[in-house]
Length: 160
Image 1 (cartoon, rainbow, N blue to C red):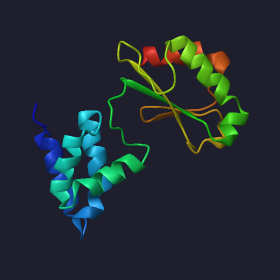
Image 2: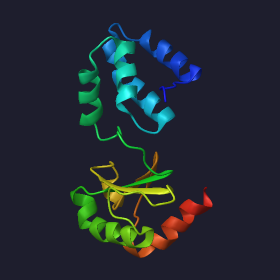
Image 3: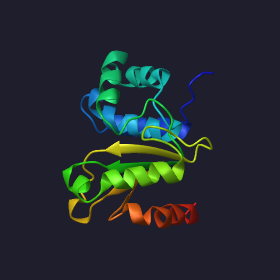
Image 4: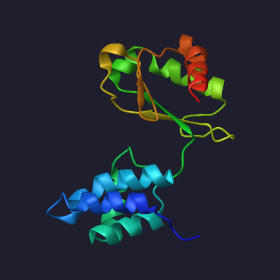
């Protein structure tokens, strides 16, 4: 199946490119736009981006695989990222991860069979004073503890 980038996204990219004196400077925001549309960055998508900014596909691949916010594989509708940095670890992120694994029936790095949840570990979410921190898609949740996992997941379900 051929890669399809919507006209709207292509227009956003064209507008972005006008803001940079060198097209390559727009690489990160373009990767975000493409990932937001497609859900993940396939090799075909990376090749398309490379053509837009006139660099090699290897350059785009190197950037996309370097930054943890870019995904090469699709994730669930709700991507739960638990901060594993030192403040969150001291506040119980390991126990939180185990509780989430138990409740969701998956391990870190996996997606539930229904495609609803993906569980990941990440580094600092800049919420150290309210650890443990969890990012669900683009929304930050603070002080999520293992004891409150059921309440946390129920709240996510209600926002569906």
